[in-house]
Image (cartoon, rainbow, N blue to C red):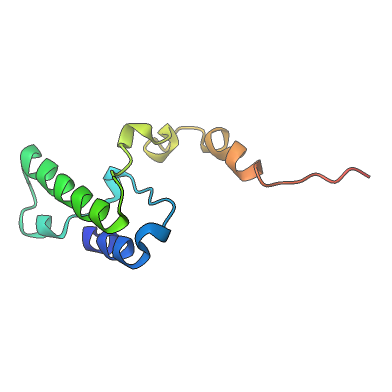
Length: 98
């Protein structure tokens, strides 16, 4: 998701937005379009500025989800995705006994 879109969502929804869960790896910083190989320091600065802008709009602290908090199945195509996500899919299922 483009960084400016995240800021726009935060501004539109403000404090009515309960959760804005976006992994770090899914954020594209428009400023990086002109620098295809940014330094680690520059990336941290961009992430810090984005967090500050979104936090200000939401009226509370916001940080992107760290990539290491995501299930392995997102990054590893050989991982068993069914095992990772099955409990989520079945969470809202209600079984009717006859």
